[in-house]
Image (spheres, helix red, strand yellow):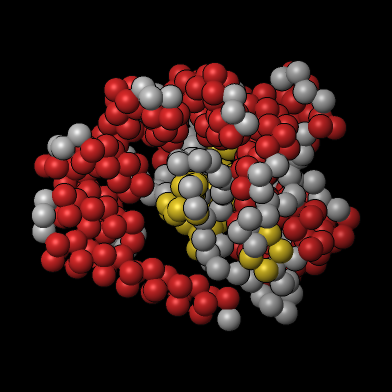
Length: 371
């Protein structure tokens, strides 16, 4: 299995998935099925309508027990390392990576495939069956950003955490480490369910099943109303259904809980532009771009500046886009557009050629991966 981003969702123009959720402490969060069920009911939901990703079957528990039996007298950290090694021993376990499929622990174990979130849920479920109280951690690192047709997908990372009195160990596929608790965000089981439903809502958006997307995303925001990514994706679903008022409302709620959220601002800018509200669109894009490292957000505001004739300002945004992601072909397409407006056809041709080379290289890498 390739090491890659663990959480994934989809939204038109820009999206986030696992954002840092400001919660109090481990003591106030819901861990374990009984706490999760109680918390779900407190949010006005029927647990039967919500997916709990960490359920473990008897077969899974027996497999985990077998893996750590030689380490029965060792520390909990050592047992977790033994379990981690077993997952990557092809003679013990086989797991095929499928980036679009977020599965529960039981589904992932039975099918032997899923995305990184599926694998992480599997690790949590099995380690808990051993009596080791693991949980999800959202790790602060730069997200991976890619574009698929008119969707920009922003991927963020989650790992498995294990709390000791003075530090938190984390298990990230082949890598394990430890660090101060404050540098990572604990994701409790209720938010983990919100991630599951947000992922499925995102997949439904990609498959144009918008009613199904709404069902999942409304569950997600009920579970974690303080979590901006669920609101952003809900806004996308409403927008694609043509419900512009609901779309703008959802994005505005994302900004209430996460001021400056570039995904919400960028999506709002595109809605404003479609409505002919150019000044508001430009203001939203500028706000999104000012603190953004997303190359597609920076390209969008650069295109607006080019339309306004502000070529110097457009160039500044595109330089930032190239700095943050110099391997993205669309950065060079935009630089080619700028060069043409400046009357420099040689530079335009050079940038267009660079974009073509990067696309060809990405295609070759993709073919190599699939083979």
